[in-house]
Length: 367
Image (cartoon, rainbow, N blue to C red):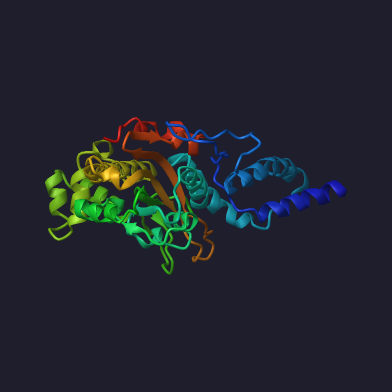
């Protein structure tokens, strides 16, 4: 009986533990050299462990205990009714966007690295090039978490539909001119995509709606328009002349989706489109930032620019009965710092558990 009582206690305890990202690890801060920080791997005495890592260390051994007990004792978790939906989301999250972490885990890692590089509340200008969709601007959003942990007063919104920095050269010029004297600039960028509770990529349960809706509507809408027409011009004309941002997305995607011709939309194709949307955001942002950082006098007023790129993965926020809520996730694909001497790739220091994930993008030089 004593053994069974302990097992029941463990099982109840698991039900109160939030579901953590399956790919998180720990990081430790070290002194920086000329080529950037070197963070120790898990196991060092001075490791700083994020919440997701801590939860996984608890969940892994307990999961094994529960698995061994269930067929013997017939124990059923009171929360078992919610597990299929949660597992469908998490299964497709790990399959289609491997290495994704909760917003809070990403913010904790990134801000710790920025602090080591001298970013403070008063010397940092924060910009966001994420989609203007309201689901990216919630109490638990990545931008809000980064802002809170950095302690900065405001965020300059660079992104339009799909996360593309449609503010252009004029907007980027205004943004960079707001940098504190000898200060630093931090920009987070990328597209977003939903995964519904039943695991459908490109769908999301929104607050107050009775059915799922599209996320990202701009990227998936462009994809469907391209698939429904035979030429890029037909796809662009189908939208109309007043929809400039969507027209641009259609025009740019129309030459990148040949691999999807003849396919009906599915989880794999929406994932493919989302990754192509990341390429569009990065290409436009790189062009705009580069227009200023390559000017000889830019680095007289700014000491460093750090870019965090990736894909925001939205989930339902729990307002629909039977739909588990929780934080959104972020799949980090790039983290690099720029200064007058060049660029420093700090991705491996902050996300050392899956550095190969972003290799195609990390191999692309900034200038």
